[in-house]
Length: 211
Image (cartoon, rainbow, N blue to C red; front, side, top):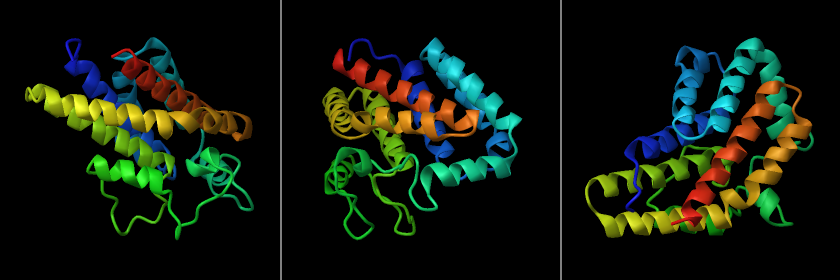
């Protein structure tokens, strides 16, 4: 943990949260709450390529009306018959598609180890890309807190759990998911979102592999 950088770690926390928000229905609040401005600030602290995609993402959102984005969101992630880019990890990790009654047990085990609980009123499956990004945020936040508090053993344990999560889950399926977004999206916004998410997750995995 000798190369711990609090500014970069906080930027990773922020980018996890901001990317997660983008995988919910597009809304005017994205601009009102300065989501893309804050995303760009975080991305600039991490990687120039991330920053460029973040800038283009914000520009693409403001250039398109919400109704058109909602249509693209529905086509990509909901259907009507089959989603063009299923937002669920198990759609990419196995041949069988889990249902709400048969959740992906592997990711639930990792959530449990990380102390991550999903609200009972939340209606999405636990392997939704937004949820997995939120879990990555929690791991990063807790690791940051442990490192700041001098709890080196806890920080190392969280780093190991994050590395396992990326290797076995989010990092293992984000590339084909982003490719499906790129080929299926009609809006520049969702193409940029997929590219930014894939790049960010890959950088997190590469960074952990070096430690």
